[in-house]
Length: 347
Image (cartoon, rainbow, N blue to C red):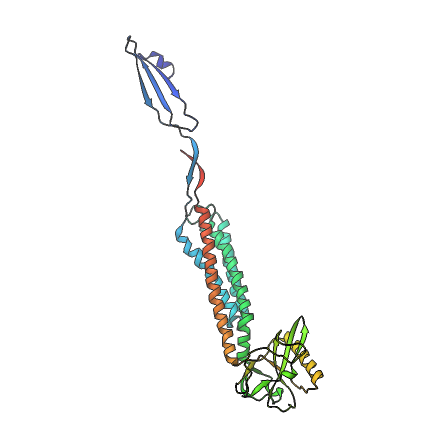
């Protein structure tokens, strides 16, 4: 207590007990000595603890109101672009489709800029961010992911299902077609239904080998030879390459059952089927003027409807699948940033 303490009577001596290794509360023991004999007594008085640095488990703050936004917004990007790329907009307005794709990329980039800006609307001072604008970074990353996946999967759906469906809508729909007719009269044919009694001529079927076997068989009506075999049923890896066994398409091949087919659209496959027809022409001495290639089915319009249904089914499946993925990513981020972690604090 300095030099002034020596002038005090009774004599006061102070002794500070240092805190232990675990930084427990310090106690100041004040021994008061009375000058009269036998009057000595001791008094222990607690002293306020000295601020110290230690560790404490603390959960980081999380803005739960931001969770619906970070779940729904990327999912909307995904669904919008999947629809744009899958259906008529991409076919009729391709530039508009790519413009929407670019807008979604731009929005995702905006979130990234907001995450790096200290003066942006979502800075470290707001409860939405964890560490440094975690939700902004999350929206940016998942926004890019949703944009790329939505457009890419939409294009795949368009190629596999919608493109063929829309092509058949633009082509002619012919019913009760006689396979003895010249093929030149049906060059714009899409879905075709043949006359009842039309069957495949198994004896004239062949397969062209090119990694896969491209099978062809002429469609006939009656037992007489045709002036020109212009209507052919086709398929891949469903026949004996040497001929005589065509198993492509429907397994029902009765003369009392009406059959039909969908016109082959792929130019790459058409060349290989044409090579198979040329082999049949050479092997069986057939006349072919304008060969047309079809699948062999009972109801071509039902097959067309299946393409559209597959497009819708793919859309619903993709939307549900990506929503589950987005929810999983949000749960992971929330789990990582709400785990109790040791933080340095003043006790």
